[in-house]
Image (cartoon, rainbow, N blue to C red):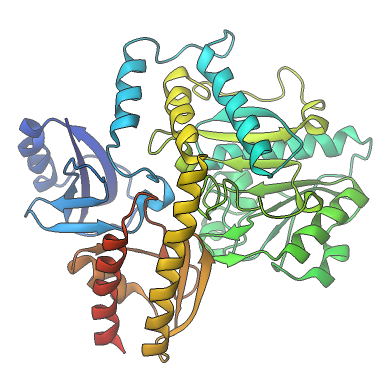
Length: 436
């Protein structure tokens, strides 16, 4: 079995899809692409190459159909933290698929419970969200955030104040594309085509401590924030801001939600991005997805007992969430991502990146203005639109992302080697030299 990542931008269709084919079926795939591609809705603008994954020990390299090699600094947008086609993941996936793939949530299966217990235990042991108590398992980050929004609304209405339905999020945040999570994402580009948004949402500025009292009021039921904004440009929320936010939420009886979908699960070198913060900054709800399944769709909403006791049977549900196939894979992945050795290596590799990127900043001060981030979630702030740089990097064999305004986003698999870090940054430097 070989993983084939197809990327096409014909005039009739723009799409990006991860497909699993046997090598003998690759010609059939090419035939489909040459005939205009499959009838997939045009929602992603993608590059013109057809990439396929070549199985290898490290799982960080990709080859296209012309046998051109690429280094992946994207990890499928912070998803494939253990790399592509990881042997441990594929082994667990294959084994579980022969036993039980799905049963509805009216019946118990062991892996949903085992995963929930592991999430709670590893979270508490890490020093993050020490009051974590229960878990709702779903299929994606957007779905995890939708659940968090609903739970916060339920807590607000349970207070007896029917007006306590307000929600607060922050500019440059990204929480998803479904209507609730989209309403929490104050980006005109995403919101305008689908307005009006869900009523009750207000927006503030990250790290503006002085504005918190007026922003979070007695009619606020929930506040959602990313400890590190990913899509918005790799902006880190300060300890002072998050402590003040939690204090204000406690004062008015609002639920504090941390969206750790991109920045969590080891990405910063801590299991959770807020893990190094004092308990005074811990959330009432935390959401996760992306790295949890290493490519298998799964998400989770983690709540305290104070939130859980307000949610009763029938308040929420999911058909596929918590299926034993995804839950068992996630259990395996989380067991590895939560290891102290893995987390220490992420911190070390993050410093390797930072050291080399700071050198590039010194060398090209007119092009690079700032290096932000922590661990293996890194933002390189440019003084120009990065689109051409991303395209040129891809042409030279490096896959890299953008974020926010004029920011390069680096979120590689955690298994990246020092050699691959230097190799990728050498490509980036060559492109920057032409752009400076």
